[in-house]
Length: 248
Ligand code: SAM
Image (cartoon, rainbow, N blue to C red; front, side, top):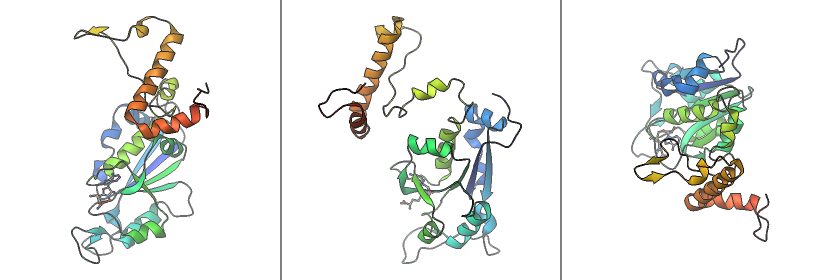
């Protein structure tokens, strides 16, 4: 990977109560090499640095009662305003299970957005008013509950960084991946050709590129149909005409 002498083209700022968690896994492999080569830049900001009292309080008990603590809007807003004020372009994302599920389409858009600020919740989450007042985009990683937004920030950054120009050696590999064509990826095989009495599909050994391409497409369609009915329905809409005939 070529080092970039000028400023990195993609910058992620993470607001967190645990800045020491970063870069964590992002220091390894593709993302780590790209970070070192200054293809992208990571900045972490400790939300506690914006606390208003000498105890460094960032949370308080929920109005109306109930378990746990809620992150204070004044502290969080001060942190957001300091690092990514509203008049600066870019995305300002708050991780929450209530958010819109992250998908490859949004990842592609975010990879093309030079400035991305990621806010990691903790405790029971954040005061609703800061989400409204700062117009934060609420993003979820999936229908499960993490103990903090940091793993979600790492996942989003990793997914974006591998789409930045020059990060993945063979850009064609990205086009074949799950979701890029609205399908899951076809199954993959490597050596040995027979393992524990299981042979790889014969067509993959044929050397016939047209047949291999057709087999992969059919296998990707089958996997999507069986595993992800929602994704399959969307794909069918774009690939089949109203008489059920394939468009390409
Ligand atoms: N009380 C919240 C709820 O039931 O929706 C869960 C809070 S969770 C323990 C603490 C923080 O982890 C959240 O504020 C959010 O930043 C992060 N988090 C948890 N699950 C997440 C998910 N599925 N996607 C994105 N962020 C998540």
